[in-house]
Length: 265
Image (cartoon, rainbow, N blue to C red):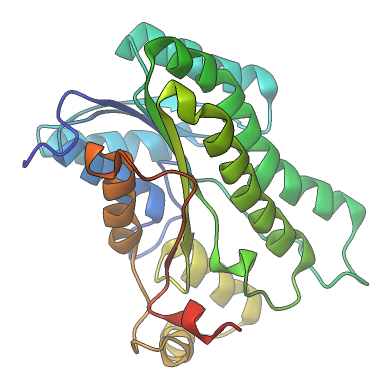
């Protein structure tokens, strides 16, 4: 343990993951933050999945605990902040890592209920967690907030709700960064590209009817570096942005995408 987050506390929202044979962004961030010395609050709608993440952290002698919350519910988001203060005494880091594209469609075909649900999960949830954590961080006089968006925010295809919600997360990040810099609170966003995570591979394979191997080969071929990223790539970028090494970095939208964003424009 090198201690890049030694003595810090971190809330990882979406610290569980979809079942699969690789690691998701949230679980990888939680494990890495704990390895680097943070005490981690692992938040997930599925308590058993958050508890699995905690068990992996504790197996490495890290410090973590699980908390169940549905971040589309305002009361649950308020409860995250309350529990963090009770258990951690302060909130140094908040990572928002929830998202879905289930039910999305092109603009002419999307159902209103699907639009609302995707916006609630991908965007409103982040506003709610930030809303309840910001007063604590302002009182402390410091804090780091990290949102996980997507390269789809700037280079989409035709899935209207997912792409619009992720673009809005980027703008939410810049608004929070601008309004809270004077309180020594930083807010940044990571835009993962094509990633080999359970949510991406298992979910898309099931929806498309393709095998996971075929899907991986197809996605790898689209990446300039020839290989998809993993949850660890997102986690190491997050570690930098949430550490004091990035104390002068705020309002940044960082692509973690193997060069895919270089093809834009």
